[in-house]
Image (cartoon, rainbow, N blue to C red; front, side, top):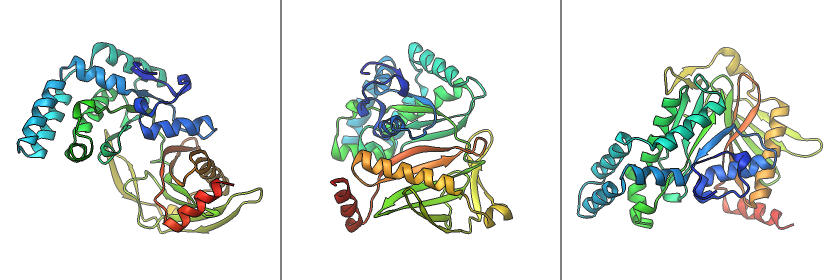
Length: 319
């Protein structure tokens, strides 16, 4: 995979987090285990490096970091670097590859999400996501802005404290078909002892509603499900042409449950599979497409469980 500018999960023989990012390496691993993830491709770390090299951004980064270490305000330094990224043109070969890949997803009119996929933990605190994009040029601009987000004020400061080689930092980007959670639902699932806890709300997952539906599922041949209906007074949907907005839910949405028993059993199965595959407690972020009715996994991250529960889960993996 090293040196490739664009990769598709189906074509990867060996998953390299250093090229596709930790988040999406996890998704690719789980997709191979049968978990449903949105179709898409990765603009790799090698593509980021090609962009920095061709646009001659290395000297800009080095100059601004020297100013930062000499006492210049970090906000100004980060803004100067991001401006240089956003004003630079992507290399022609890279732009062509991204546009070709977008055409393979469906081309203009096909809604995609463009997300950062950080490689280093210190770059994971202000990664960007661009939703509801419908054209190739929009996807290109979002990729460039994801590259630039490597130099947010927070990421720059954290990197300076932990791993100060800013020129060695990279930012892969993932382009995926949109899951129409604005017409469906979203939430989280995580294993706790013998149950899987699932939170669910109408619409997009951010901002999270303060009173979602809550479910406890005991997986097995005859699953046991406990349901608690939340108030779900608002939901987040897409705003045209870009962005999101929060609107009131309908009386039917407030009085109904978000997920069916089949949905709950599927999510619980994914949670158990993820915990076993990674041999640690994981929290899954999922979305349900309101058009197809299908569930998709959009992120898998290590779950910050209380120590007693985490140790219990860890012991379970040893048997």
